[in-house]
Length: 117
Image (cartoon, rainbow, N blue to C red; front, side):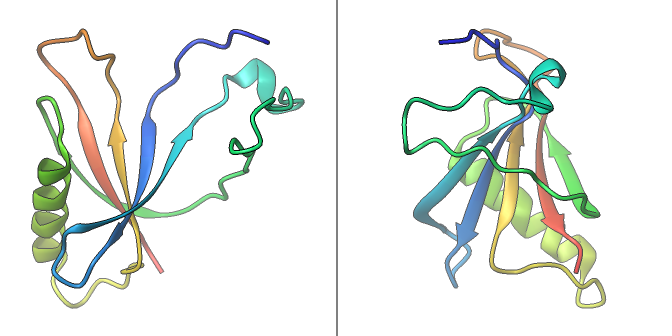
């Protein structure tokens, strides 16, 4: 019952299949605005959970445009290639992040994050 507005980024946890495509299982995360973080309102929908994301070190690659699944998959492949075999990061999931509202036509920012192990 409380309007909080939209925050950025909208973060989708993607679970890659062996061929690099994404499994149908995804998790969408929204950042709570600062004024609600100490005492977040209780969700009325039981499918919505309040979680605290621990600090992490990430490897990131940015790209523009209206991001679709194929764009995130391609960017993840480029990031994987850029990191090579030396970097240790989680392989079972990665984050797909969008920073802009749907009505922003130009200068859009999207990122793929790999979590450093």
